[in-house]
Amino acid sequence: MNSQTNKNFSLRLVLVVIILFSVLNLIFTVPVIPILGFHGIIDAKTSAPQSSLGVMHYPKQDLEKILEYLIRNNYWFLTTQDLYDFFLKKSKKVPKEHLNQKPILISFDDGYKTVYTNLLPILSKLEEKYGKKVKVVLFINPATLDRQRSTASIHIGCQELRDGLKKGFYDIQSHGLNHKNLTLLTREELIKELLQAQIKLRKCTSDLDPQQKVASHFAYPYGAYNKQVQYYASKYYLSSYLYDNKILDYGCLKNYYEIPRIPINGQISFQQMLEIAEGFHQTKSRSKC
Ligand SMILES: [Zn+2]
Image (tube, rainbow, N blue to C red; front, side, top):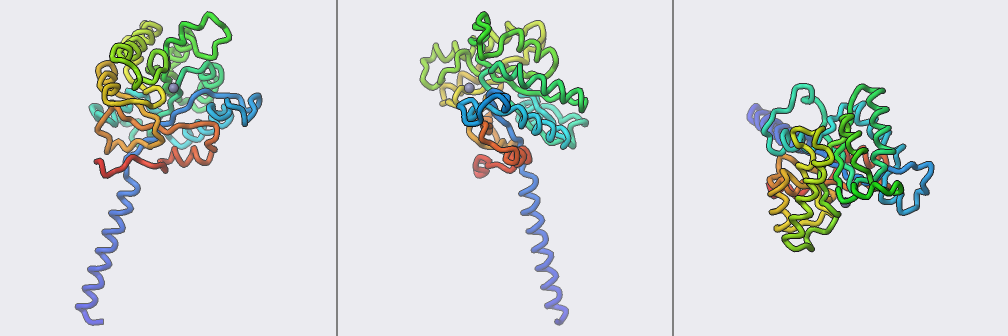
């Protein structure tokens, strides 16, 4: 080889290395945050896995294992306000203690009583064991809070919500007053669903929540929304969550009323959960960025 060919070869090699590095860099730095959407939490020992409960709800034994894994692997359990301030608006800098952590947001919809009876004891147990507080987001339909007089209610009551909030585990947010499909309502009905939900949730928690962080964010019931729903949601709430099986690419998201969430039902295995937590999940098309 003469010196010219040698030079060309080196140049090409450098070029290949640069391209390879850029591609790898792009793959590993896509800024994603998994946002998980659970419903109730069942005891796998007492519920048949094939029952309808086992499809929609998640076994507490598996959930405990997953939360333990996330704690041991240095995850940061975001509240809806954390996500909004640090990653969407970027109005606040990520605090030092969270800089080397992996963010994740874990939410539970519809206010099933089992987020109190089955989930809260797990959170307390993990706090005792690891000295870390796992924060969970609850998207609640406060019309069900009134039905507490019946002890058979399958939904969480105001006192139970307050208990989890006081202990610092619950981030209580709105899922509409009655869990209606908001795209099918008149303007007046839509406003009532959005606004009354906020008023009722804040009434239940007012003395514990001086900054009114409760019911500042929203999750569309059934994930259903349209332009009108989004417009009115933006009048009363800072952000809204979907249920579209996408992972949040926060470098890309411009509309805070279309935050993606990944539905988690009883069919999702422990291994699949870990892959989602690690960020291996479909994003919305990046071409929109
Ligand atoms: Zn729901």
